[in-house]
Length: 131
Image (tube, rainbow, N blue to C red):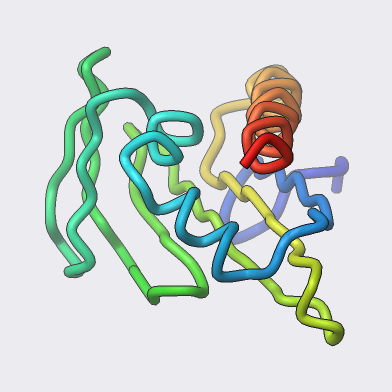
């Protein structure tokens, strides 16, 4: 099977990075309206209840599939599923942030989304470093 193609979730991509910030700081940003705008889209408001719908200002719709405060948020995004998850480092001073998207249409879409998520990660890292 080609890289990024799975039997159950189709084409998928994951991007992760360990950031030099405690999990609480990363979570507070990533779950804030500004942070959600970075990774999901401007205008999206997420309610921590499964099945709650959202809509971005660009018109993308979806619903919350999972929301565990301080840990992860999982949502549908059009025909795909996006998850943002945090894993605190043992020292408590660093946090691994991961963006994962599954049910992508093709290898080409997977590559486009890899570039997208790397750019989102870069932007999030810059904002957190400035706080």
